[in-house]
Image (cartoon, rainbow, N blue to C red; front, side, top):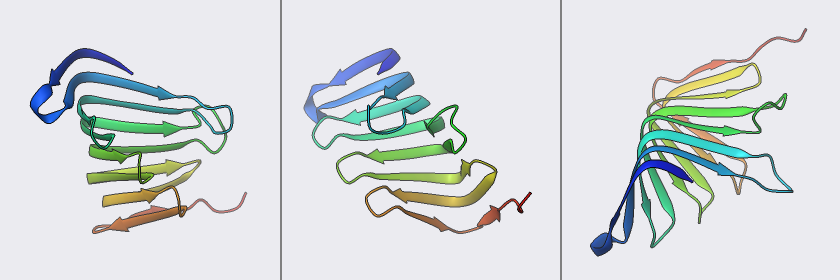
Length: 125
């Protein structure tokens, strides 16, 4: 995790960050990269709150790269869920899902979208 500015708030056991870049690498899964203008990391439950051009990219450079973008995002690593709000956009390959809110449940491999949903699925070539 890299941040331009980092401040610890002891009474809340929280880290406040500006200009965040996070990279999670694994031998068994594609790399995940996260960036945002501001964020807060709750040390008690591991949740990361992101604001301002929040972007999560999984498998950068791979044919099935997945990218989630929104003004606000919550990453709940304990429950393996990602919540994006305020006009979220999910792009996987050539498929695009846009909605006011998008939730990704990594444990169940589910994507939930709500309000003003738009889906673009490319045809076969």
